[in-house]
Image 1 (tube, rainbow, N blue to C red):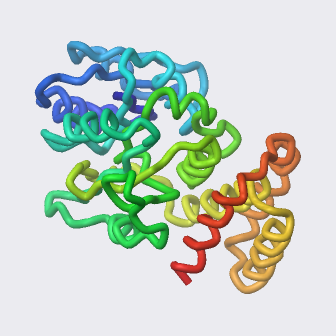
Image 2 (cartoon, rainbow, N blue to C red):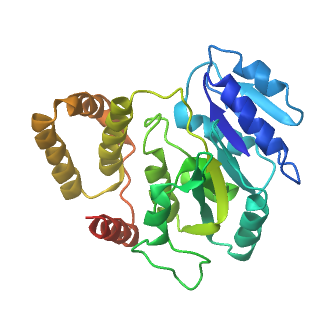
Image 3 (cartoon, rainbow, N blue to C red):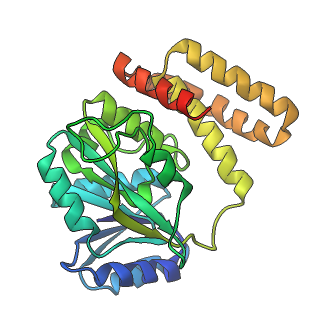
Length: 282
C-alpha cells in the first residue's frame, strides 16, 4: 500500500491507525513530500510502516517510488485522509488474480462519517464503455487515486503518474496510458474505500485551476491535434467570461513545451473510448 502525503501529520495518523487494523495487515509505504511538520516522525511511529522523506514535493508522482519499492504484485493507493474497508484488499486481489489483463480496479468511494457515495461512483457505475464479458465490472477510463488498486507490472509499464502534472487530474493521464498499453480498468462497487476529506485543503479555486491546466496538458500530450486546438480555444473563450481561468492558461503555456516533448497519441480504440465518455457526459 502506498500513501503520498504532505503536512497532514494528524490526519495521516488516523489513516494509519485505520489501516493497521486491517487483517491481514498490509505493508505500507509512506512518501513524505518534504513536509514542514512532523509527518515523518508520526508515520515512523507505526510498526510495519516504511517512511521515505523526499527532499522536495513531487506531488502525485511520489507514488511512483512507492510502487517501485512494493514487494507485492498489486498495490493499493491511499491518501492521507482515506483508508480501505476490511474486505476490500482481499476482494481486489481475487479479482486481479482472475483477470490477468486487468491493470486497475477502481473502488466505490464512501465519503465522511455518513458513508455517502462520492458522485464519481455513479459516473463509473454507468460508464458508457459498458461491461465487457472479460471484466467483473463496468469498464472505465478514469478513477480516484485514493480508491484504486493497481497491478504493479501494468502501472510501471504505463510510466506511473506524470511529474509534469504535479496534482490535479493526474488519474486521467494514468488511465489513458494504462489503456494505451493494453490494460483494462474497471469499477467494482463491492470494493470500498473510505474518504474523510481533510480540513487542510487548498482553496477550491486553486484546485479547479490545477485541473483545468492539467486536463489541457493531457489533451496536448495524448489526443489528436484537432482536439487540442478545440479544447484550448474553448479554454481561452471561457477565460474571457471567467477571469479566474487565466492563471490556468498561464500554467498551460509555461508547461506546454515539456508536454509536447512527451506527446504520444493514444491508439484509435482508446481515443474512441475517450470520445464516448465525453459524449456520454454532455
